[in-house]
Image (cartoon, rainbow, N blue to C red):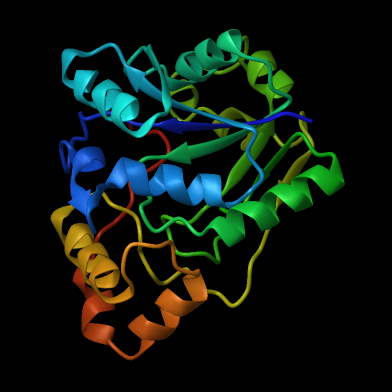
Length: 241
């Protein structure tokens, strides 16, 4: 079975513009996400899906510099971007990544994919019952399901790509993977300057290579002042673009 990784990335973040190309530990945030996804060992192919906006010429240039294919499509209709990628190559499974997760754990990516593959499900996510820190979630979906929901998804569901699937579980075979221990109190995604301060501290301590989430959690457990840097930040609701 062919498994395609698609990472959505754009410069136009509302809270932290240009975050995907910030340099972290000697490489861009986007490059870190790509490397971690590749190190999972479960992807046959990988594409960055960015937008046609002029600002995202920089994303396309970074992709060329690090040797990753880039597809460009609509700004808010991210589902159409993903389907555009699927028109350019054949894949049975798609793993969705976002470029604001520079601490992505390759081991978790591999574990989630193997559960999905063994179960033969339509969709798997680690975020239905959240136990992982935000920023380390993994999603896998059958390419045929993405094509099917093109006729069904509307408004925010097109922005969030897979949300129509997991909010309509009666229509699809959906698996919610729970990973213990519960580390959902930690926030390891990159949306704000406070997120950046925490992530910089983590990378400054552990270095350039991807780090297991258990190691990060253990280190932060002895440094509550770091974990508190972004504890006040609230994630946007699903309906918010």
